[in-house]
Length: 203
Image (cartoon, rainbow, N blue to C red; front, side):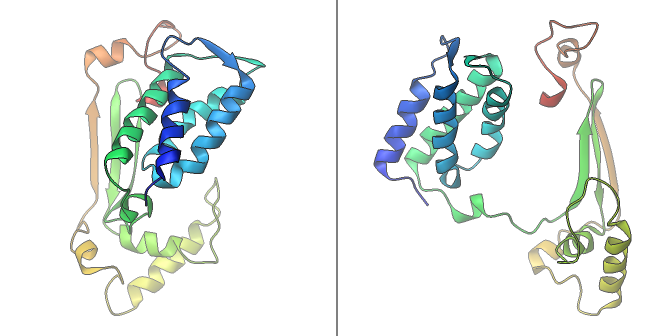
């Protein structure tokens, strides 16, 4: 997949209209930027993550938008991605999610980061694909997932995943954690350090 030359040129023109020195813009300019970027995301791997700060800025904006450091960082990331897609086509595998080799959770707070990787991740992943399950913000589907995993375990024929993925599955859970360096912790924004340069969402 690749953007036509005129779309690549348009992408650079849009990004160049928001130089680091630009501090404000009309809300309509931000609407236009985000709208055009969204139309190009399919050919820009990593673009979905970069656009979140721009979308957040738009959500909280008045008629005149203040362009903060996070906004300009996101534009800089898009500029780097634009240079990358200008040099080569985007591979399909970069924009189509693959079957995960492991399933787990991770999180971070001021002192450090940590998480867990599960040995039965393949079964959990397959269970999540069942049409009877729907996304939820609670544990309402917990019993359904458990029943699906039990049913999967009772069937012969392995996990049903590609051999390369099945061979990478864990034999036991892995629990990990790692502290952040002192300089990172010192820059974290908090009630006692409101002037920090790193917020919790960036950890």
